[in-house]
Image (cartoon, rainbow, N blue to C red; front, top):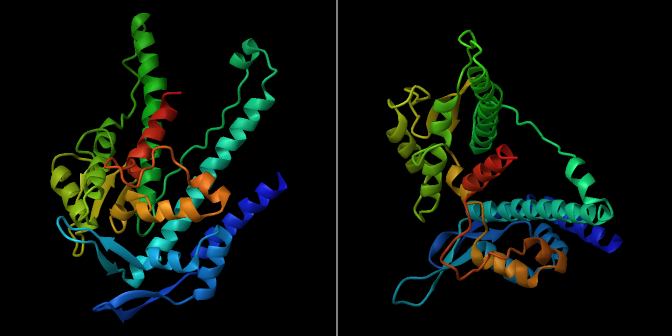
Length: 319
């Protein structure tokens, strides 16, 4: 309806405005690196569009309570750069939830309108849209490029298995000579990227699950695990390569920089911030942020970004 569409536009506007919010450091609470809002007007607009209390939202963005066993919680101040990362994470998270909500809504409407179609026709009449993943190589290749290139490799592996492996089995079963058919298998690079318990995606999940996990420690674990043990990964020998590794992809060699990978892979808002937005946000914001598995007090945490992405690719390959 028109009101819901207006609410969607308001939330989209709020998402865009989050990237205009800036912070600076001030002296407060015994530290000279306590974040303070520099662009109050822009943050007020975000709060108005999301339906949030300004003062409490500022507190969520610039402070956090640290709990230690056997002692009372301590209020700690967040640095300006961390506060900015948090507000942009809010925009990214809300956008992701909004997109998923819209897809779910469209599917529901389509299903309802197709309710009068006989079942035997439904089984044979369906439309699928496959957005083929490309392959990206930039001057600096981050987690986004790794995910895109991983998907490219996995879909290529699927293509090889379906077209070549499957057909060769048929040839052999029918006694047809297939010795002249040669093709490149990317199983080795897939093993490094995401096909084993020590794959890059698995190592990233392990590092992101640690409160003290860092990009440098992740890069080090990748280098130690795979360097010299596979022809598909190399460590650059030039200076300043502690955050880098080189993957010899099927398409092209790509040097990756792990800057920001661990935080991006966590891909979730602090539990207290998400609970605050669920409680105080506009009804539509609460609807799209609602997750039946979310529990701010639960010990089990949601899946990491890498794990979710890999699961989605495997579901696609299983269709």
